[in-house]
Length: 186
Image (cartoon, rainbow, N blue to C red; front, side, top):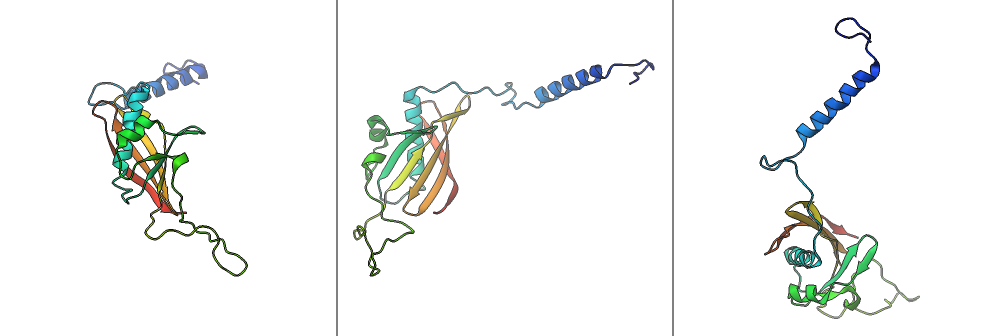
């Protein structure tokens, strides 16, 4: 390859300049907030702050999950699931009260009916006026940027399901805003 003065230039020099150009372009296009420089990830949250974020997200989710039914809650982290702490359940102050998943009342909604050989339904019958509980799987609060975290709530009730994403500012007083990103029947 010949340079501007007709001299032979090694190909690796051209590649080197190309890499520098990409780095310059990447840094120039990095997102900024109101001219304050690149975004930096938020620090990890203390258990108390994460609990406050979960409470705010679950209270915001009530707008979409508004039947008078218990919230049965499990906190998810990777493949591990655990019941919420009593402090989280008390802070929700819901009526009917929120309960850990292991204390959840029965769900009667199903797409499948089990019958005996004469075609009579087997199993318990839904009591008159009974409303199935909401089953909620709550993700950890994931930092998006310094002052914003997100929480995913997978909700179901009988044969219906919702996936809600919530965003919260993890500073007192913590407030969350949730929206339904998917809903349907399964």
